[in-house]
Length: 459
Image (cartoon, rainbow, N blue to C red; front, side):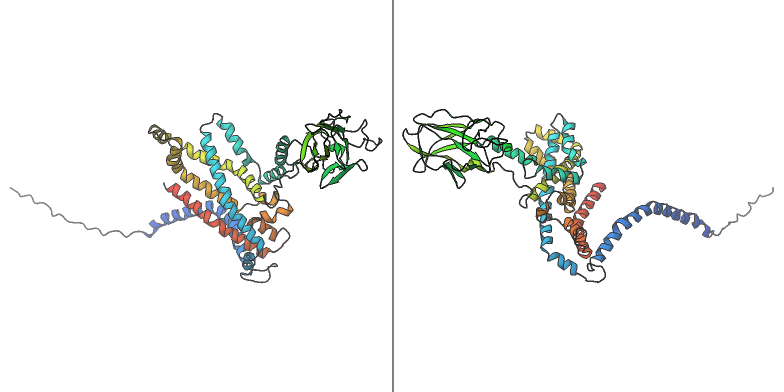
């Protein structure tokens, strides 16, 4: 029998292949292609940012180190001038006031409007009314508020309303410029028109006046007529305008064509200077003073209050109130923005938390302070910081609303920068320094806002 033998097994060892250098080419070319694609998308934005943001900032910083002409290097001299100039201090002070007042009022009003919006039936109409000023340009809003707050009641709606209310509660009429007719026994002293001598009760005393324009007469004025005979305890008469339109007539005489002066207070002044009685003239100018002592002698007088300028408007656009008016116009515009932002935060809030608190017995104030406000804190911070950035750059309203005499009192940094550079100063070095100051003031708020956005995105 033949024995079978197994052939020997031979181990074959193969050396590891060296990596090919060509294998890296597709990967590196892919990265390069991807980088080119990213660069092609970013390049336009970077170019625009560089041309419109980076270059102007660098150029302004360099320009602030040169003099008015831009030829001579002055170092920090423009910054020294800026901080030693009284107008700059006024502008900085006003900017601080803006930052402390305007964002707070806008945020609080926006919060109130947003909370009320949840309880109103006509939500859309209310939101439209509050947000509508945002659709108006700052320039147009400035023109509107400058017209509303004109001092002349014939032009300014606010003062027209104030004067209307004052006239409603005032009994006397006002005839500025009135004077007595000469040689009729009347005298004027200290604004008071009176008889030169005393008269007894039961006497009719007519008081002819001049110096009053026909177009200043009240609409209720009627033609002057003779007063009724006076009783034993009375003094009567007629107060009239001693002028006939078109000319003619006898001076001092009560006759047809002359107008009575309604609403004038007439006093009976005793010999000791006390007022024994008074009356107010009717539309035809007649008056009757009653309750006097029979047989007594009195001087008939028209108080100076009859001849004042009357109710006048408040000088809202003066240096005293101009900042309040400008801030009010800003609040009128931007309260709608705060309302919309906070309303969006309220709509994203889980209402079950508020309902659970109400079920546990919490009143509306505790629900608002313990649940609603804390949950709205991120939105409130964003709104507040955004408004701070906006008011630091305020220009339009401050430039349009104040008249010439009030502009220095309402000055802010942005307006001062424009005035120094382009508004007649032609000092671009100092204007550039003011621009850098404004940038430094705005940067912290911008950085805070950007960090808030990043934190919100990371959650």
